[in-house]
Length: 469
Ligand code: 2HG
Ligand code: ZN
Image 1 (cartoon, rainbow, N blue to C red):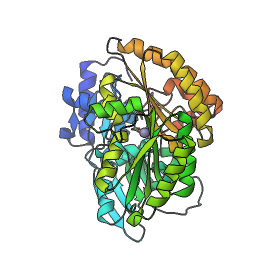
Image 2: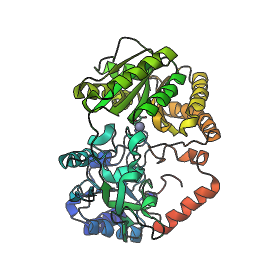
Image 3: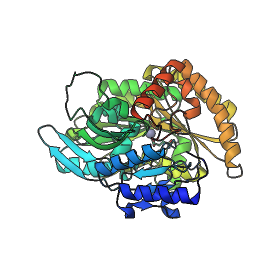
């Protein structure tokens, strides 16, 4: 599939693609190749054969059937905000962008559910839910560009998982085109359905390797009522989990995030204000519902107690929706603020009870192995999920940097394996984490993953080379 192709073969394949959907939606220009051929990782050079933008399920089926005949690799593509290279096309694949399939198809207030095409942007769905007096709670900084189909394909998590869970918890129905071109209509919005294997869950998190998600039915819930945000300055790593224990036992938290002072400095450089004067090595951001300020006293009592214990050194509580939004930006804007430094990313998770031990271990490891690199910590610590970003020194070439970081990753993942954790909490395996999958899944399990891929994608045309070879 990646062999050099004669101009005649190429022209014939492109003609064939043009018979699957309107010719105008088969693009081969360099700008489209650049734009659609990659995600937010910048490690790979896009090189798709073509970019196609189907407008209907039937066209997706036509494409898949044609790809089966021609043994043409397809890369399903959403908003391309992924961070593991799962939506990258650098081997002459055809990118199948779901961008034109972006309609909300149905809403039912009794079911509190919405059915939409895969290319609906997360924020559009959130806005639609709000207009109905409801809430779609899967949320993250890339809400403005990520697609619902992509969120499902990666089982996206984000900033509200402590209360609302992951994308998987909100999908009640899925329509998927398999690697043979059949259409599966899975679970059809049911809450209860005990009629055998639930194939829907195989496609959630499958990173485009089992099928192309074309439609989804999603649950909605009631909106958060006057959420209040606190940012707390924390002197050491132990304090973070002590604060989590104290606040979650007294308040229903809808977020519990953390970031380091080093990470904070990058967003401050982009024009945001420090939350308070005291500088501490770490910060916690937490959120809870606070209708009419009913829980403010309780939150302040917890704050006093935590200060007496030495778990925090300073803090602030939002007084308005605007201030809450500003405080959120201190955490949410970190990833974008460091993008120019081409960070090497780790996105790891362990059970919550293992977080303190893991933090101590990796703090020592990173201090020892990366004395010269800037290492930033942040993430969804209330879910046991840490994002560790290592910034590339300007004078170091990309290959040497990636190699050095990869070697440290082996040690990091070995520690993670001892703690029963995962090499990817929410960003997926894609290309970047593929070499490390064995730290999280044993050989027997990987053999079953391959066998499942063979069932749904017998010709190996769907996102080949992603997750595993
Ligand atoms: C976040 O939580 C995103 O901000 C991006 O998952 C994480 O940049 C990262 O490593
Ligand atoms: Zn994240």
